[in-house]
Length: 572
Ligand code: C2E
Ligand code: MG
Ligand code: MG
Image 1 (tube, rainbow, N blue to C red):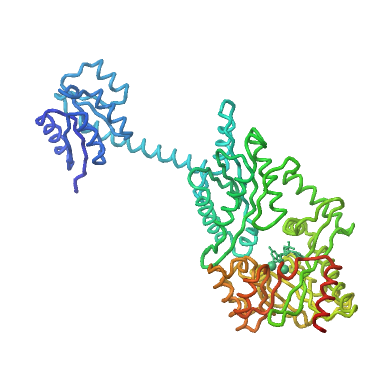
Image 2: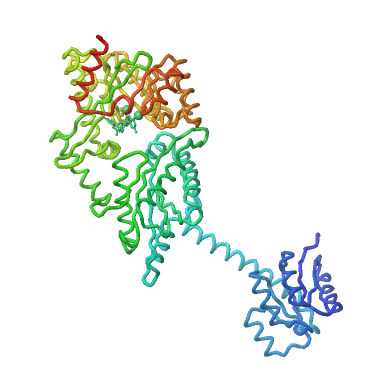
């Protein structure tokens, strides 16, 4: 049988006594590694030098006694069994030492008790250690998010409570709430596992942007909260938000998928916008929600007129039910140009919602609500019919015909009668099918691929065009492209935004254009805002463009004027 190792630190001034103790342990079958020390410095240094199993300490030495030695061991914060072996210690003192942490007391003339005592104490120390680890583990689980390693919501609330507790100095601080845009799209189309990897990467980027001095917590799903001390101005906060947006402005790679995420950011300030946890959390959420309404990489600082997400969300939901009946939805139109001839070739219909006496609400906010409530089906039908009717009206007015693109939500795509709905819209409005394009997103294809291919084939057999919108979000799932009957790829605007600055966008755009052309597809870039982007797209052979540079989404009458101008230029 192999011998067990025992690492014993002996605090002992007599070599003979330490050899005697060592002999006792060897007799019991142990392989003993030991150091002998008898000064304060020697003990402190030895404690650091090795992982010891136990300390055996004499009571009275010229430069050290057992009480001081015990203190030094405790200060080292190591949970080591401390056993006093002495010939001279009075009983009362031995009992006192045990009260303050010595584990046993053995007389030198009765060393037979030594080995059982050491064995018992080492076992107990192991149990204590396990308990400590379990406790630490529990604390970690209770206060930290296992996915990102960041503090969790409970931790954050506790921290905020301390920060706002009465009696604390009145130093201001800012609370930021950060929520990823389109994150649902990622998990829905690529699965929770990839979503989790993205969250872990995002957490790292945010941590980098905030630095170590900020408490950054993950509160739920794709929502983070940060507390930045000594900050009470909107200007400073908006600088921080800009940094955050910049830190996310890169491609994240998860399982070979190249993804792009943006975030909406809201902020409020203590004590100006709230003096307790509840008020701060409510107001930072209202600010975040206001940023979400704007859409994209946006930032809003809290203002007292802002309403909470729940208030707005609930009110909005019931308002949406009325909106269809009250004709509060309208369409805006954004032009699409052929890049080589600079000719107007298409228009995208984008839905808007104007509540009476209220601002126009961004579709980024109400489309998810329409989807959740199922209202997207009747509203989608209305959009389709209105877009077809409008295009026919332009044609009847004598403008050169263009194709109108209509966005389809994946919920609409799951409707059994989609093809019939589209046929009806064309029939009722008299628009020829080749002037209708349906924009779908990559996630439509994830479930039930065969059925999706069947529907797309049927739509195309009527003569309708199919475009993949926001292309590049699920960049690696390219194999389906070959199998899918489609006509056009629409490069996601996040890549266009970044193109021409030597960043990742360049390569992705080139790859999409090359791949699209090899599959005989038309490639359109959306979100085109600058000359540089146009130049880049032109040099790389992109077919069509759409974006603010050419025209923002506009009401019908403005688009009619644009068509008029364009048709005049063509004639001249
Ligand atoms: P999308 O289909 O990708 O539409 C493009 C979005 O980019 C539009 O935002 C448009 O206004 C915006 N955009 C166009 N050019 C530029 C540009 O140069 N720079 C910037 N920064 N943005 C530009 P919008 O209208 O807010 O729509 C957002 C999304 O809402 C759409 O993304 C689409 O997914 C959805 N949506 C809009 N209308 C409809 C609709 O009628 N039906 C359905 N199902 N979804 C819709
Ligand atoms: Mg679209
Ligand atoms: Mg798009």
